[in-house]
Image (cartoon, rainbow, N blue to C red):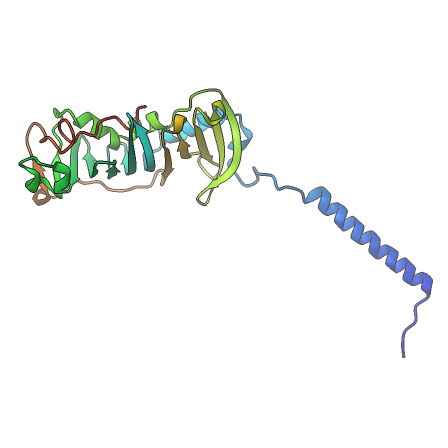
Length: 258
């Protein structure tokens, strides 16, 4: 038997249905717009550009370790860095157009490792290749090379913004949500700051196209130790001249400057 409903009842039912649909659409339109970009964040996105930069610098200063990777243009040369840094030392690789070498610093002891080609035509090239060569503190290249392994020096030189600051876009660096701060509309550099947990700097685009570095693993513990004696060479008070350079390793410039 087929059920029959009065026409008026059907019309009322249809009206109620239309009303419900309308309310649902209205509710979606009012409450379901763009999601709050600061929802679930550390809240620094709500601060002014100057305050965000201050927070990022404070976080970086308080951290005891970081991994820094990317490119740095200094003195007309481009360096590619991949360094793990802490307050009392660091290790990693530095590449330029001419050379590739590894650095390891434990306290004030600095070691450089490169292949024989790096040492060029020096008489000691065969002995120094692929060995950790201790860099004497009196060698002209010591200060420059040490700069690559000094967390405070590198961060202070690389994280500077030059010009009037402004808040930029919300974005992601890897999987990390960030808010950016730009200086002089980007010409003075651009800094991406984490919106998750501690507001660490996570990417820095340097002013004038002087390179881009990413910063990760803030506060992650790692060990650095002096290399074994059988892999170490102490060449004396000064490193030999290397191919295509003046003296020592001849890195040519301080990566944290310029």
